[in-house]
Amino acid sequence: MKKLMSFAAPLVALLLVAGCATTPAPKNLVETAAATPQLSTLSKLIRDAGLADTLSGPGPFTVFAPTDDAFKALPPATLQALVQDKARLQAVLKNHVLPGAVLSPDVKNGLVKNVDGSNLALSKSGTFVTVEDAVVTTADVKATNGVVHIVDKVLVPAAR
Image (spheres, rainbow, N blue to C red):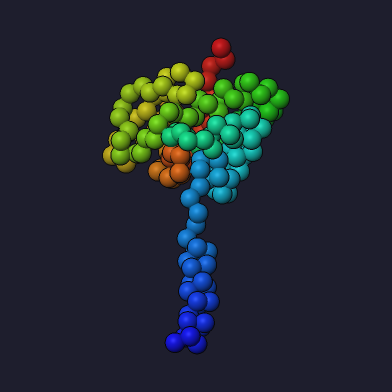
């Protein structure tokens, strides 16, 4: 019996470690963006804007996450100006964030307030969801503190 126990203990430990290695650890919104290759620009801009701590916090938040291609579609001068103006960059990024976790089945047609208090138009037809003029290309990427919807455009609010 003693010999069996000395064999079984390392085997159980190995199985536990293997189980942990195959099950990805839950990620918050910032980690989710960083782990998604098509969101690398957004991930960098979140850090540059100083919003990583907020979006890593308890939330919950809904993030409409523009792809790298969406950022490339902006005029180069616009993107450069955002990178150089932290307050404006924060405003643009916050324009993509709603308080609370809104999954695509729960989207209702109409206006919703983002975390900055501005209105965003949400629309849904079947499983097709838009926010303003951006199309949700990948919906309901769950994070520990909210949900990410990947969109094809950057939602640049009017300057205040």
